[in-house]
Image (cartoon, rainbow, N blue to C red; front, top):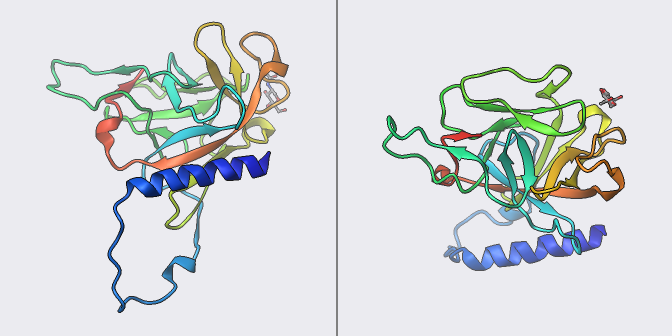
Length: 213
Ligand SMILES: *[C@@H]1O[C@H](CO)[C@@H](O)[C@H](O)[C@H]1NC(C)=O
């Protein structure tokens, strides 16, 4: 399975590289700069997240914030107070910031938490409130090789070994920490699928939202 994941990542890389204009090289540059591979464990650039589990219904879906939860696929729940604002980012993508934040423009931002049932949620705009027993901060991991196209997001919330997605009645797959005592939405933990969470740097915040709902 890991080989398949690697192959899929490699395919993504190839697809991505094809879209990027080729850089003109000169002969005066320092040699072999691309072989240095400093590891980054804290994201400095906002990012989106894509699920990777080949041969499954959750392969290559965007992780989206909506209904105070996170799902794979579909659109985010986004809100633009217009007026008074004259315009907002498109609200078509969920963009993350740092380890445990949404890249929402609303003053105060929006934080992501892990509920004790294993699901993830996010604070409402203008509020720092989160449910009793939830973890806020310190439960996510990030790794990326300096200069690489993609990074990897992980979680050890409540002793999890990573992420899983569980089917819901009408919202596709919901994102959970992969813990044995998670409360699966349909009551069937065996229907949940573990997945790798690939991160993609996002510099165009017009793709994000003023506020996620
Ligand atoms: C699940 O187990 C973790 C780790 O023991 C615990 O912190 C969490 O509260 C448990 N969740 C529920 C819903 O019992």
